[in-house]
Image (tube, rainbow, N blue to C red; front, side, top):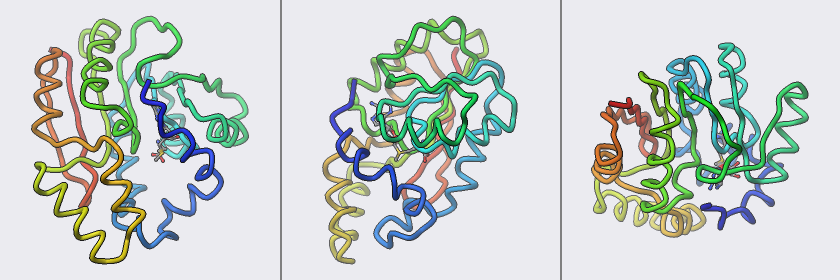
Length: 211
Ligand SMILES: C[S@@+](CC[C@H](N)C(=O)[O-])C[C@H]1O[C@@H](n2cnc3c(N)ncnc32)[C@H](O)[C@@H]1O
């Protein structure tokens, strides 16, 4: 579920790695410190780790280097193909944050730049699904665009418009970017304690531990 933005990735897959490297001016601030952001997520992963929305596999590569036991999930066919070419030995499952192959216990759930494709109700549903799957000290580690509050979200849309970054402004208005207080509430209500860290002007780290 939350697959309504697939057509964007059909188009974007081929040039995605150029975007994260800063070649698209509109998205430079979103992908500022991209490599460190992904390392920050990967370094926290232990044991059986499920990654949602692997895209071209940039976080995946770091997770494989750390030798976690990885289950890779990606709903977009073009992205899956690019990642499959990069990691021929890895099975990449067609799935999403909510519909994914049945798995036994998981120690870590990770994702980068993807959770905003779910509405807040779907985010809650995802956390509810992960709670029984996670082991006793299980954790969720996500890096994604979020905002301190709704006003900050609106300010960033206006700033993007003022800079002529209309594609970014559209994206920030269209997709389901949430706020830190909402994320905190959803996690508390579904059985987690959580800490947040801001990693650039857009991206926050969410590190939740099952209570
Ligand atoms: C911006 S890319 C991020 C890719 C990679 N994780 C990274 O950090 O570079 C977002 C990815 O999320 C995937 N995606 C979109 N909707 C999703 C959903 N509902 N569940 C899981 N992944 C989703 C897209 O297909 C795409 O590969």
